[in-house]
Image 1 (spheres, rainbow, N blue to C red):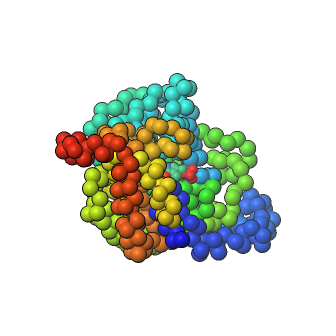
Image 2 (image 1 turned 135 degrees about the vertical axis):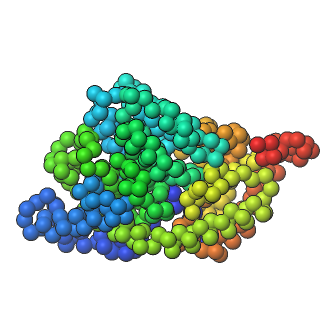
Image 3 (image 1 turned 30 degrees about the vertical axis):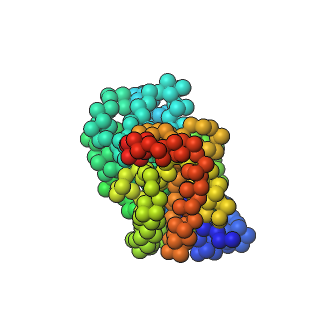
Length: 399
Ligand SMILES: *Cc1c(COP(=O)(O)O)cnc(C)c1O
């Protein structure tokens, strides 16, 4: 059976070059980079090289990069570390309703600790309202946290404008750039970001490693107390092979971004246009143009996203549902909920996230397999049967 992977926003394979660069650091160069002897010194150099590689990709100084154990850890550190460091200044945080759970659930935790959080709404395209953001700022606001690119829809927030507003009001600005990195240019200077989060496994490095950019002069309370690693900002022995991998993945992403993403965009557009040409009553979720080049999130009216995914999986196609299915919850995804997507459409939201290794043949295979599956599932749906006799009932036309 064919195996087609179109779930790159969930995770990516480690690139072969990245794996090769990591291998010597398991057995031959196994030292602890904090040790002063020969074994440690050799490895410390590799960690510092990786720090430079990450820094170059986002245009900061290597001293402003702290390695962390994953993207979630980076978000947690940025938000809780700020809340604690700026507790005397205020207790108000602004974020958006469509953030990754790593941000949303950290904010919910802080609410229980006495912080106030504003969750900004987005419009029907998943776009942020800058006027609403500015209006939400209070004298007690200590942090704005807004993601660079949405993992479910690919919608890109106007990060430079958010940064300008943060600067104007002198509020610290954190952005989860996990999905943006390697897919669109990311520059912490242009966007005036103070804290930015990177995750290895979303861009061809291994799982379990990430980086946090902390702008020079940004006070952040360390959350892991222990040794003096990472200039006292994060205790714990470095995961050297993974850090080396993250560094190289960042360097390669910087070199290849324009070329690879043009290819990915063409494939994504072919898939998108093919779906709309072949299947009626489909709705695009997310911004039609201001969107990651690899992401396509669509709802197929009258059917359930989970059944579609299982049927695609039987044909070897890996995609993902936008809904919070993993928890066994019947709630549709919080992102769809925030974007005024009609509830039955939210339940059928399906995400295809492509990567540079996908091919035109794979896209065409999906376009061949998908329409009959959608039709079969619709034929099984009583709602769909009823609507066939009722022109007014078309969900997609109504919205
Ligand atoms: C995957 C992801 C994360 C979490 O990163 P991990 O390294 O898996 O913890 C955070 N934010 C966004 C937007 C993501 O897509």
